[in-house]
Amino acid sequence: MVVAMEIANSQSSSLTPKIPNKKLLMGNEAIAYGALESGVSFATGYPGTPSTEVIETIARLNPEVFAEWAPNEKVALEEAASVAYTGLRALVTMKCVGLNVAADPLMSLAYSGVEGGLVILVADDPGPHTSQTEQDDRYYGKLALLPVLEPADVQEAHDLIKYAYELSEKYKVPVIFRTTTRVNHTTADVEVGEFITLDRKPKFNKDIPRYVRASMKGNLERHKWLNKTLKEIEDEFGDLGFNWVEGEGEIGIIAEGAPYNYVKEVVPKIGGGFKILKISTPHPLPRKLVVEFLKGVKKAIVVEDGAPFLEEEIKIVAYEEGIRVPIYGKRTEHLPLEGELTPRLVKNALLKLLGKGGERYLKPREVEGAENLAPSRPPTMCPGCPHRGSYRALLDALRELKFKKDELPIHGDIGCYALSLLPPLEAIWTEYVMGASISLANGQSIAMNKKIIATIGDSTFFHNGLQPLVDAVYKNLDVLVMILDNRTTAMTGHQPHPGTGGSETGRKFNEIDFEALVRALGVKYVKIVDPYDLKATKEAIKEAMQVKGPAVIIAKRECIIPVLRRGEIREIPVVIKDKCTGCKACALLTGCPALVFDEERGKISVDSLICTGCGLCEQLCPFDVIVYPSKK
Image 1: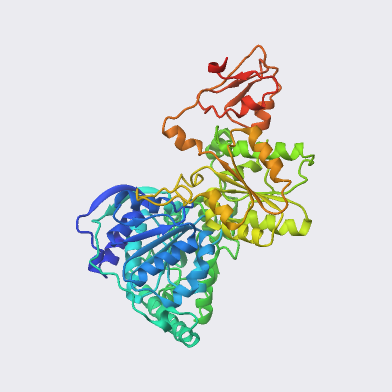
Image 2 (image 1 turned 180 degrees about the vertical axis):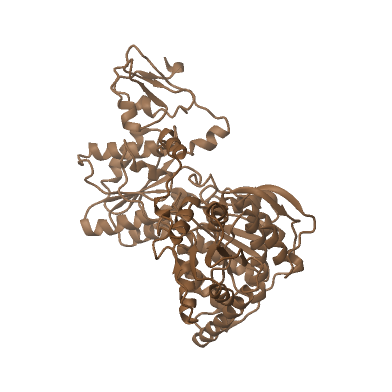
């Protein structure tokens, strides 16, 4: 909101852009611009949709800033905290579930506080569109006693993060910057300013009571300081330009984040009589502002994405202040507790509040018709994905070892390879949290007294797979761990990780050798295979299954997408049509979308537009009718 920016800018002259400029930006890009305009010198995190583009944009716009990925969110937050201790400004980014990983240092960091501004961007995913859960990270602000800011749109995302740095340094606390998918990935015109470099010399002062949590008496004092600071921040939020009241009426709407835009869209269609309180500071709640608003309405509804966090906080304030205004929202079933809000859902809720039968408001017929006409597009591994070969070889190896279908658990992890749960592979049994595949295999190897299989990606292994593998070696657990090394963090857009030696900004880093690392942990059976070679991969798996104790297979083959981007296209096979029996074995065993069955002719063909020449179908054809022209 440009108006909000002007109001907020009046509080601090450092927020005023020197040379205003309008750009078409995605929400994450706007956040990156705001951080660079604030003089951020260190940015890190772990890639995860919908947060990823923030670090990538900073790295692209200003390579002088140390903007690089960390192995996981805990490491990222600790490194950023140490930078902020020295007086420099730092940024940490992660998706919703990433804050679970960083929660341990977050709690202690709240007590120690910071010197330079530290913003923790956590991108929640109501829906969820690309996440395991719909967790609402505003609760972490309440748990850690830290301020939480949430922008409503792209412009405000840019403006609010600049205020976040001012807030962080003024009160010497980290600030949680909560976004949602609709803000992160919406594109809009944004007023931006000049990037700045702060003239600061990093310095870290020794302060035992502040920085050493073993200092029990110091902890009590820091807790008192944190509570006092939070109260001061609450008072400031009451006059903050990012919170405002608009409209006139006896029915109040309290909106936060992206749903504020839905309120603005549907209220004119319903009619007048609504008074709106827009909030960008869910924690601590601007108590005086909320109380004054509630006293001016006869009933109110809270519109927010995620859990009923704001609704619960407002009801607590109303009860404590003796305000008897009915407050509606998710808890009263005016809005759903699950899923992402939409303008339709908000309109339903307001009509219901007015007693106009909003629950009967349906989608327009043309929308329903478009949804019915849209073709189904189930997710699938890309043509040439090396994970397809890894799982095909694994399933075939177990069959040849006389295991019945679905007899032996195969644990999956977070990454593209989770798509192996779909037909025709239907391989993995679980997909839990980062690194859990090995932990789950560890536990079941003990409980079931047999070898259990874990499959985990390369980036995921560095994120949280090392520790459970250490435990497997330590306890000599009977597990087979397949590290699916496709040389990148593929699912979130091909970011580098310690196993690639790559960098987001072009800096030269060291590549961690998977085989050397695993052997150093004490794993005695380690073998590297090419998942495009089904026979060799299958034989390695059969051999590893006979090993007592932990065994590791590294299925190493680069993700096909960066290969294609470099123009390194392999030879495309063809089908000898007059010899093809139409058995569909190639398609049924791989699920490759490049294999097309002609129902009329009863033959398989290879779609040369999307085939990458991986060779799996050639190896699986029982009649040798899929061939490479150069080998004819």
